[in-house]
Amino acid sequence: MQKAYDDTLRDFDRITSKCKDIFVEKLRLYGPSWRHFRPASLADQMLIKARRIRTLETKGHSAVGEGIIPEYQALVNYSVMTILQIRFGLPPEDAEDPLSGPRILELYDATVEEIRRLMLAKNADYGEAWRHMLPSSLTDMILVKLLRIRQLLVENSETTRAEALSNLQDIFNYSIFALILTEKTEI
Image (cartoon, rainbow, N blue to C red):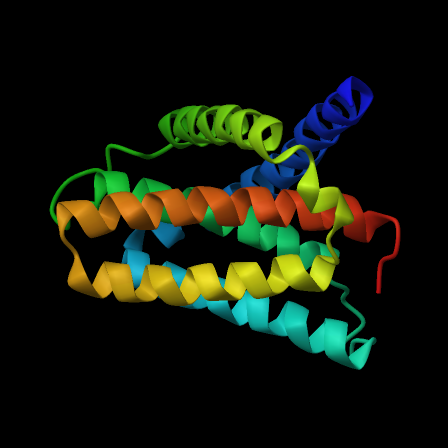
């Protein structure tokens, strides 16, 4: 079992590194424009990605030639962005955004490390159960979590924000697990 945990940790680190590279490139191209989305709008963007994954899983092919892997990678990055938006709010309209430049990357790394620790703890409790799941089941779990998050963000209390953060961390980890499983059988 230790080898499986080691493999999971190695794969988690490798995949999150790829996702961060994508995040950094998008940040270079577009700046922190995502900072102007409300958390519920970011959750809607995630919902679009998850529904597209489900469509690709159902159809078995893509009309535009893009597969499932970039969509799961986007879910990883959107999870971090949404967590940051919930924690820090929208940028001020009349002042410089305190989350610009290197600060965003520091917070990205800190958020991933927090989620990594959670993954290790839950993975120990659940005994690598995700390895026996279909990627499509992980997609379904992501969709359910997103629907919950949207409702929680509408209520917008301290309790519901904390619950939304927990669900976003789960989506991040489910997306990583789905990427690990999907890399072997990419559609």
